[in-house]
Length: 222
Image (cartoon, rainbow, N blue to C red):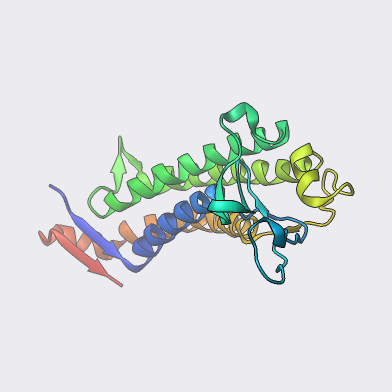
């Protein structure tokens, strides 16, 4: 028989797991990892009046820049047609680790929705298994974020950040919101991994067992 068990701690863990997965996915897909050196569009190439400086952005595999002519304006999209065209080998490794972490987080977020009905599988707590997976995902994310600055010496980054850019040195660039979001998501990932133990305790407490013994199928506890 399926017992629907809802507690504050289990619901908070579920919500955090979903938020973390989406935050990391959005950050990975964003082009705002690096803010390039300020540039002035050519007023003779379709930008009338006094040109306003703008900063192109560069992500792991996407970029945003202004174009002139008929399709003038800010345009964003992938600069790499395939995995091999990503700016550097370090960024390719970073993308692999980040994708692995995001896939694990996505799987945990999906499973977490069903923990209100199923708290164990093969006699193992789903919360503990998910917490372990979140911890592994956090390690993958850390490796990806550590490898990312090592690719700042690539030709692609040099074209955005100037000749002074080098591994772990930004030159004229600055970090964008996507990088900080990825860091914040990594921290929250480890918080979720630790908090999963509290969610398991809350759903297996004596009060829950008493409600089950009384024959209740819907159990809501603070």
